[in-house]
Length: 285
Length: 321
Image 1 (cartoon, rainbow over the protein chains, first blue to last red):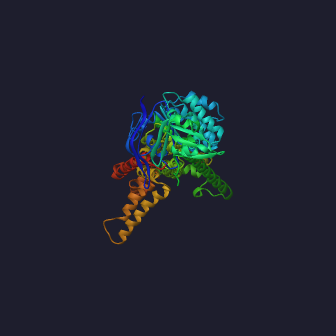
Image 2: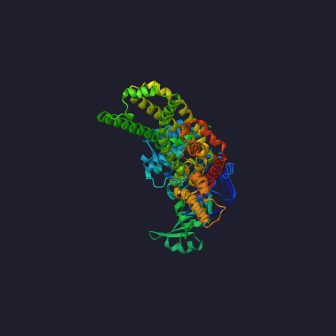
Image 3: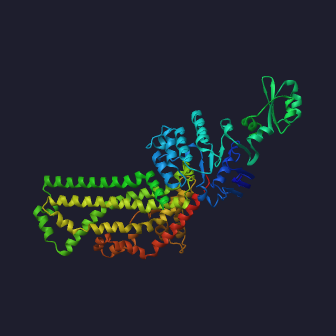
């Protein structure tokens, strides 16, 4: 499998902070990767490096190109939605479609119009007359009609209500994603994208602290519901995290043998958000 | 080429008000003011029996008929200048539009973060900046010339029709004017304008691409502060620095060259100083192109291109999103 993104020794320093600290990772094609981390962990910096929007130290290859000096060619293959508010306020729906259609060699106008037909947007409407949810519908329609190899989404559903959020990810999955495409997404609404991710990357203080695919995650991490009398035994196995629910304890284990855990109680697959909270403990302390 | 065309088109979608409506409305206002002036003149003339130079209708007609060759030339030139005056007014409005357009061109979309949308498309930063320069100093001036010419012709007709009520044949007067020469002068001046405006456009776009906030303040404060320093050194008696030279050749050129006709200052204005009769030749293309013989315009253009290169660099690497 060929890698869409290969980073090795990626670093980025702003005036007073290290945003990326010697990060190395690979993203193969046909994956949906969730890049998840607390505020200020370096997610957006990593995405900006991939998109050639910022300078950095180290090696980075995106679709075989260097985003620093081959950006113009790269952007024919890469799309991104930064967040919902970046469409120019003066542009009309009709103008946006016309413009992208003539600028982008891989844009499919019919596909874009078909997608817009399912919304309430009209050709003469300006972005400034739209709600946040409508703006993201327009942006998504433009992006989904582009046959790109890599789609980067940075908090694409920030500030949208749940109907728009659900529709956003559903459209991506049903009408856009296939095995030739790769999606990298960052968001704080982890629960909502958990079921669509194939890979998970946790980033903290400029370092990748977890990089796994979802299957391996289910094998490596386990959540066990333990009765009070077994709690002391469970603690000996060095759980990542412990919390109390209805008089029972829920322990989160990393890399402990499943047979051993079965003896303690009922085993569940941890949710990404529980895993995230456990991993990021003490971030803001 | 296709990309560039759509990029320029985008600029006109965004700035329709400044680039198209401003000159059209100025032209209409100009005509309205003239119509009002003529009506005032006619009404006052009718009530008070005031006539031009104390002549009645027949006198005006016969006076024109009796003009010698030199005098008819003067009348023609006056008509030409009348026709140019509309373009002059529209150009002043246009210069303000271009000034603020350039200041915002690479700043506004950074401020509202829509730059991230434009940057998500396969467009090089050089084409983006180039499209904005083309919009400002080539396409917008063409629109100004079209509006100026149409207003000018309307003006000319207005005057001749008015005079024809006083017994002067429209065609005699029109034949004295040189509308084609005026149109040629305006169109021919566009390339000179492009070269002349480059230092200002380059400086403003550089500030626009670089400033974190308030590009207007930076664009004005830097050259003015430098000028104050230079003038101060002058006061202290340092003979090497000529503050007058700085103000007209540096500060003036990076801030005011978007105003059309600045190049005439060195050529036509000097002729005018020598002989006021030359005013009629102001509208001749040769006086515009005489500016091209001066190194000034070329040095400015090169500096402008260098500053635009700087603007492209900042557009590519300025990282504040």
